Amino acid sequence: MTFIDFKKLLLDAELTIPKFTALIKVSEKNIQSYKKKEEVPNAIAAIAACFAKMNQEGMDYRTLMNDLDLQKKEKKGAGFSSKKKDKKDKEASPKSKEN
Image (tube, rainbow, N blue to C red):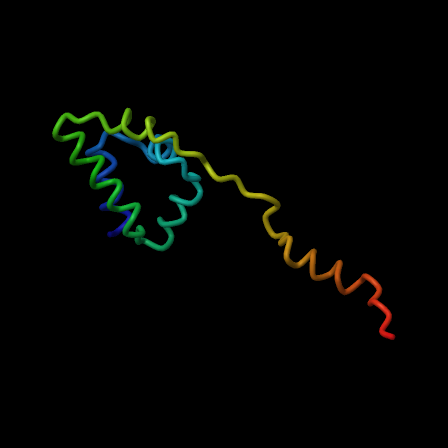
């Protein structure tokens, strides 16, 4: 789905991008990045289409989403991997003596 079609679905669902991202607990930057790619992933497109259809049918999708108690994932030290740090720590530690 194109980003333009995605935005049309949001309009049909009476949502803005910030409201959509808050509802599904995804970073707004993440959704905005699809604008450059000009294409929206299938899962995001499907959610927007469902919201638009539910809104058209008079169904309250906002309460349904809030009842799911979704949690927003937070970045933890972007650019730093704990695996890399662990590897460096192992390389720096003295090797055990062989008998």
